[in-house]
Length: 109
Image 1 (cartoon, rainbow, N blue to C red):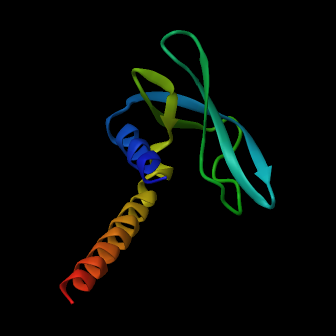
Image 2 (cartoon, rainbow, N blue to C red):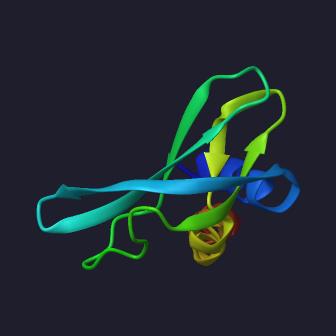
């Protein structure tokens, strides 16, 4: 999961910008994700979606800026909905550091 978040953040910062049009909202167990589409340079239609929220964040027909990996257009994100996920990386780092510190202290005793 951490690798996926790092990859998404990298595409959000460095990916090729493209206009995407919100196509529809996808509901799942009371939560909703906005699904947008854009056309990749090779002509393929690519779908990119927001994380799930309690309310739709985009309306069908709304245009947003998406970013995609030039080597893999299917690896695409809507940057404004990725930025908040970076805290999960720090949680994982803190967890691994805590485990490492505990093991180090245990070995000292």
